[in-house]
Picture (cartoon, rainbow, N blue to C red):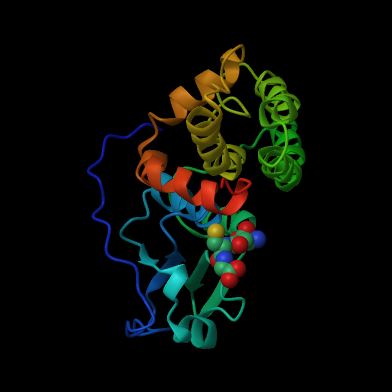
Length: 238
Ligand SMILES: N[C@@H](CCC(=O)N[C@@H](CS)C(=O)NCC(=O)O)C(=O)O
């Protein structure tokens, strides 16, 4: 659903000196970092379902985290986490489904059993896909990543009633898109390589995804993302 919306103002992330919100007061809060791909999954789900008023976004500065986050909110000390109905739940892939099942708005899980089954299969592979792509950054990047992008191109060909993994936009796209976004940028900027070249379905996926407001509102500054990847995942240049 490509809705035209106003960009939600981004409040500054909470730091070690920030007071906690009034926890467990009945407000539903989604704790994120603006640059975390896992948090982005839950954030896209919230936006896509039109839950901006129901789920309050609480950005955290992961480099200078408030101690109360680990102590009082989420002992794993990671983002995303969701404070809802007196509990805190984490794990981005679980959160997509949790938000989908427990809140109003368009569902991101199709009813068609064949689509669901293929979706589960794709989502079960997302960690290994990203692991292979991170490994490629440290080697002969383009050559090593090619089969991985080819496998995405191939998966995108399974259903032809739309440009997304299951045809229409779904939880599978939400699981993959934060990483596709980052690797597209890094391959373009660092390796001068267009990952959509010769991959029309991947190109259409990215182009059509960029028309979905719920997603585009979660995109970080490309330069900031590339800088993070250069610092954390690429062999250090002398
Ligand atoms: N498996 C978790 C991973 C979450 C995760 O690793 N988030 C990172 C930020 S992108 C984090 O909070 N890192 C902080 C830390 O590990 O201390 C999920 O899918 O939600």
